[in-house]
Length: 319
Image 1: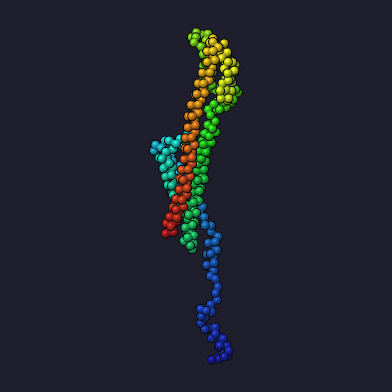
Image 2: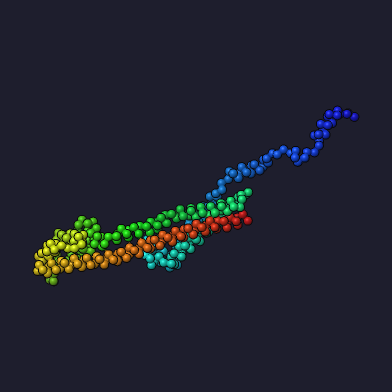
């Protein structure tokens, strides 16, 4: 039997002795490090789920708007064509607009949360934040998809208010002057009738006088200048009276009376049109403001519900 030296026996015993927990070196687990690296390289945004939810929201919103028009909400087509008044943009249209946006955005947000990938090892509050972001992004992308229609509607609302204020900020005589000047100083549609009445005669034969284009154009310029000044001067009354008396056979006094009466009727008619046009402009402005406010409310409601439904869909995905 071979006897080992004492020193060798002690070394062997020291190697064979059990190692306590305190003596184990603290080394990181390679598997955990790899998992952490994989998690850090993954994006927290699931664009596939976001795009799917956005497409669903945009399509469903358009379908619901078409359905609203088919159910008899006649103001919706007029609203889309910018032919809108306070009466047409009623409670029913507003309710359907908000309902359509909420349903479409909610469905899109739910799909964005439900179809996302599952995040392993992520705290619950971080999962809620990511689901909220996914729902909001789905709503934002769907709004961009329908940006053409929305831009057209919003532009129509704004342009209606601007055009109404620009067109009817001046009284109707000023609008008449603009039309006459655009026609090269000639007669506009409204002036034509009143200029014709200046040269009417009581004869019924075939020799009834028809004023020449030069005469009617000159009379139109006199009336246009009078509208610009606010009144027809006595000199213009006498001049037009002489022309009317020469062409129609009336006396000078009767011709001047006809000129003054015709210009007064023109001013009165333009004043009535001015009142009506201002009322219509005010209605268009109120309708544009109402439509813009409710469109903002519907979009804001859609963004909130899309985020909320994404959280709900994400919870179901994790379960």
